[in-house]
Every structure is written in C-alpha cells, then in structure tokens.
Length: 616
Image (cartoon, rainbow, N blue to C red; front, top):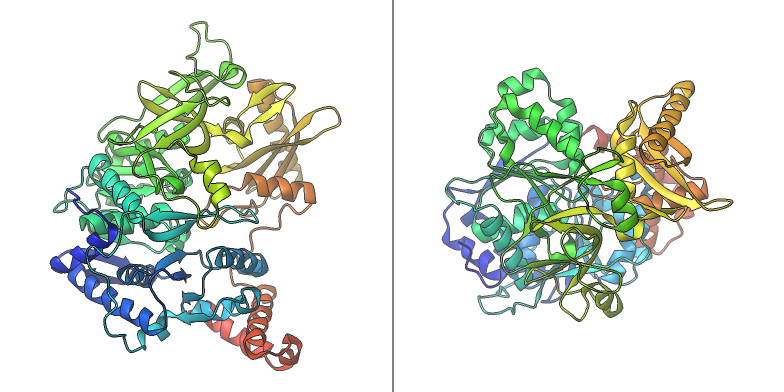
C-alpha cells in the first residue's frame, strides 16, 4: 500500500530499503547495470548536490535530453531531491531534420524558462546551436561534466519541505504545434495517480512484481508508469533501450522471459510489430506465464491487433486475461481508466451509421444490415476519480450517448505552465478536465471513438478517421498502424484524403493498392475517397513517442512536402554534413563568430568524429 503524501516522501523513503531489489538497465550491447534502492538513494542525493554546485536553486527548471535510461533516471530523481523541476525532452531522433528538432526544442526551452540543460557528451555537440536560439539558456552541460563537480554542502530537501500542489516536473505534450504546453505534474497529482496505477489498477505486490519497459522515458507512460510509480511502491523494473526494441521487437519478450517480468505496457503499434516479428522459435523458448498485466494505451486500440497478439503469444503461455487496455493523458498525470485485472478483452460492436449520424453507440440490429464498428473497452475510472460524457452544450450525456470525455479527481494535473488561457480552456473552472476525445460509457466502462477535432464531415455526414484508417489497414500492402485520414477543401464539398505507408515500391503495384483502398472504403462506408497517397516506410509524420500526426500530415499534403520524413539515422554523407553544419553554428554562437569563418577547417574533422560515433 502506498502511503506517501508527496512524491518527495517516496524518494526519501528509498533510503530505508536495501539493495536486494531496484532498477536494472539493459544496455545496447546486452550488458546490464543493476542499482539497488539504497544505492539509488545515495547516488541521486549526491547528484542533487552537484546540481546545486552548478548554481541551480529550488524551483529552477532543468531540461533533460539524455538518451541513456540509467543516466536519465538518476539525473531526474536527483533534481527532485533538491526541488529543481525537471523538463524531460526527447533526444534528436531524426538527425537529417535537425533544424526542425532544434526549433521545436528551443520553443519548449523558452516556454519553460529553462536556463540549464543536461545532456550527454555524444549529444552535446548537436545541441550547441540552441545557444543562439535561446538567449536565456546559460548552461548546456553533460552528465559527464556533472559527475566531475564537487557537490555543494547541504541543500537536500526533507520530508515536509514541499506541498501537494508544488510541481514535480513539466511534461510537454508530444505534438508539433508552434505553442508547446507544459503540463504541471504536482506532488499530489503524481502520488494520487501512482497510487491508482499500482494499487487500484495493478494490485502490486512488492515481493512478487517486476516491471519491464522499453518505453521512452521522456514520454509520460514510460516515465510515470515505469520510473515514478515504481519508486512510490519500491517495485523493481528492468529497462530496455527504446532503440533496441525498435531494431529487434522480440527483445521485449526476451527480457520479460529472462527476468520473469509481471507487468509491461506499450502502445497499440508495438503489439502489431511484435506479433509480426515473433517466430515459432521465439514462442518455443519464451515462458510468458509470468505476465499478469500487459497494458495497452497511448493511442487508439485496435481490436484486431489485440486479438492477434493474444493468439500469437498463447503458445508461449501468455494468459488472455493479462491483456489490460487503458486510457490516459498527460493532463490527468497519466492513467484515467484501467480494465480490471483478469478481465477478458471486451469488444463492443456498434452500428457505424448511428454512431456517425446520431452520436449514439447502438448495438447492431438483428437483421445484420449496415456497417459495424468494433471498439475496445478501456475499463473504469479509479476509486475517487470520475469519468463523464458531455455534449457540445455541456450537458452530461447518458448511457451509450457519444460526446466529449471529461475527467475529474485527485490525479488531474496542475494546469499548463504559465499559460492561464490554455489552462482555463482545458482544465476548466468546474473541476472537469476536458480531454478533447470522444467516447461513451456502457455498463460503467469507457469506449473511445475518436478525437473531437478530427471528425470528418462529408456531405453532412460525420465520420471518425480512426474507423476509416482501420478499414484501410485490411488491404494487403498497407502497413498496419501507419494510415492517416483527413479532409481537404474540394470543388463542392470537403474531400477525403488517405495517406499510408507501404513496402511496395513498384508504381503499378502502388496504384493497384490505392484503388483497392478506395473500393473497399466505398463498399464498407459508402465513402468516396478523393486521393490515396502511398509513402515509403518511415515517411509518415510522427511524434517523438511514435504517434501519427494527422494535422502535420494534412499540412504536408497541402504544402506538397509529403514524404520528407524518415531520415532517422546518422548514415549518409548528407546527414553527416547537415550535422556538422549545426555543430559549427553552435560553436560560432558560443565563440561569437560567424559560422562561415569556421567552415573551411571544421567539416572534415567533424565528419570523422560523427562517423566514429556512428560506429560506436
């Protein structure tokens, strides 16, 4: 049972545990680093005092761009011990688009009023150009330099030094808007949500349970779900590098099997990827009977993906009832609803026409006519929390009526950092958090039907993009989980555009797939699709956490720049040259010289260094 009133209390309590259990970090080469609870406590206190030695004070924001999970966790928790507010940011993933990354990061640093950024030596060179973009950024340091500092005397917080409404960290949403919003995760909301996740949702047992996660730690599901919640309950966790999972999805269950993990979570796309990649040999060597909770959230949950995953993993001993769909968002700290442990996967089949036109979730008629829509139950709200469905007129709706999902309870975060207007619009004055998602309640369980802003209105009829995208995935050649639908102005009315990734490269084959998509959607929904655009793998715009960006895809379509995504590696001289130029610009900003003055003698040296880094 979690009894802490603030997250700081939970961090301070780690000192009282031994080193028999703790966090295990799997490195890219397969080696592991184990840090027991007592050792973790000692290390983060030491690092906290090192932050103070660098001039930071309580309440300052500290940006973290640290790819290595162990260094990220230690630095994040160190900041908490001295009252510094961490701002987790994703590292430069698409190095060929470094300019866009730096612009986005600069906007967040300015919004959060960050003066100090901690990264690693390998990444530092790519970030120097931030000095020119963010004048108030005074210190861009590394974990290596931080470790060399002599710690300050004192400065550590004690129990009772923080209030429940004090911020723990700022979680910036992973969208691509020009005005980023930082969610204030407070001491009280964090503890309330961690208590709900571990206690009410997972019924954790410190002596038996162990988490396994490959989720990125700059994203709320990876950070809160597998770092901060486990800290509040002293639950051991094994961390897999995110890129290691991306390269080899089966590593996920390799680690679950080896460490006898009982709890793991991932977005819908990860289940599809693992189902596709797991071989009979993998299934024969895995024993997954240890898993009691395999959570799925962070993006729309496809019933077919869940069912295929359960069927594929059954020979390895996975219990079907271990699958745990859930729903949450950063503004609610993290989780809002969980399916009950040991409950079977529940899929609600409704009449699509009634759903779109009347905004009601009506079961199909006995005649069997009409298009059907299948939605997965995301469970019930936690004790002390409440889910409500509201119409556009703010009237609370009844059973199976579709409207905006709203949420209230102690897990609701403290608003947006220094953004009162956005805070009023989303968090409201009535206690209800406005999610912007559409859904309904049936027998007390929540079903998500789409995003309020993403509804397509074609010839006066409403369509949810999610349903169209799932139907398109049924066509061979269309990559599952990589389809985006939106509307654009047409000659008479809005026209539907569908953009998808495909592995097909032949022009004739692509044309055939596109026509099949149009025919299939017309037959299923009586929907005429104006254009189908097929892209290569990796070219659809996505957030740093892997979510598809419908709005950005639409902007690229209208701007004629679709297909510009996907340069995600350091390979190729063009990418290396772009990186070298950014490094030079950063150095110039620090030295007060024009980049052109440095250009003649820097490129060759920098290209050699980055080539070596790539090999490492």
